Amino acid sequence: MTMEAGGVSTICFPIFSIIVFVFIAFSKAQTVPAIYIFGDSLLDVGNNNYLSDSFSKADFPPNGIDFPTKNATGRFCNGKNAADFLAEKVSLPTSPPYLSLVSKSNKLNGSLEAGVSFASGGAGIFNGTDEEHRQSLPFAKQVNHYSQVCAELQHQIGAQAAQADLAKSLHVVLIGSNDIIDYVDSSSTQKQYTPDQYVKLMLSTLEQHLERIHSLGARKFAILGAPPVGCFPARRDIKTGECNELGNSISSMYSDGLKSMMQQLKPALGVNYSFFETYDIFLNMIQSPSSYGFNETKAACCFVGNVNAKVPCLPVSRYCSNRTDHMFWDIFHPTEATNKILVEHLFEGSTYSFPMNVKKLVSL
Image (cartoon, rainbow, N blue to C red):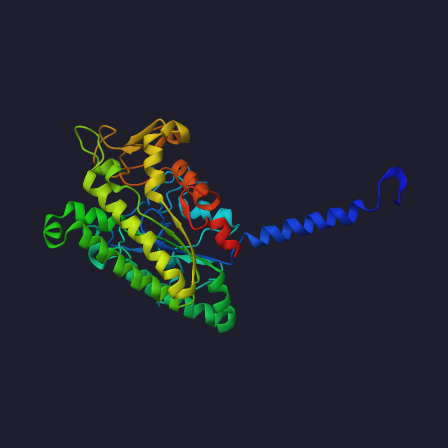
């Protein structure tokens, strides 16, 4: 072995170089060129800020109190949501809201190569789900906007490069909670459909949209099931604090059906996917809060009146100081602490992911 002054072997440098090379190669294997986000307020990073008539907004404090800028950004949260944490996992900036990229002349501005978010507070699989909130981007409209982004991306970098990027990019879908809440709250819808019929209609409608996203170039999907909406603070029984059984039953039924649907779509479309059992991990957090560092899983952190009030987070709301102890920020949405835990399991875990976690998916 050749030695230099000080007794240092010259072989150390090649080995060090190899280690650096392997580290860089491994890091690149874990990333994707872009993330495209579809969904509702659980993933919205500000699209509804641009909907002037929408009642479903979070562009006011105390929302954003724990965000890096300390400002309300349109996220229905005290800080970062799942879209932010997922972007961090693959070393990308958070995908910007689609509506922030659209000019008054309805043209897309700026680079689209790192992805776009179409998620919108109040959105559902069905176009009519957002009627209560006056205005959102229902899933069909989100897919239409994705089509426009794909066309513009081809214009910016060329058709071949665009198709290659889209095929490697991660397409995240988390939607259905608002449709389930709409069913639970609507006696007329319950008379029209049994829970089983309603869930089947949700799934068949969603399948059509996923097939269109695939036809536009998507090949990697992170599909998240619905959380147990019956355990949202807004849906718990006022007297007993117990979860709403109908809401949870439909959430579970939809999530199971979605998992089965993705198993069938994989060979039919030739896609790779990760399905996340959002329902199961939420229930586990609620039933074993101390395992996740929570002390409070029933009440909202941002509240009006008493902490179990059925009122959304408002500019006049009070908010708890121990936000990392709370699972829910407001009556519908998780805290930053909850979002971080969800993404850790989504990306790295195995218990709630099928047939693989997102870390494995993005490396394919």
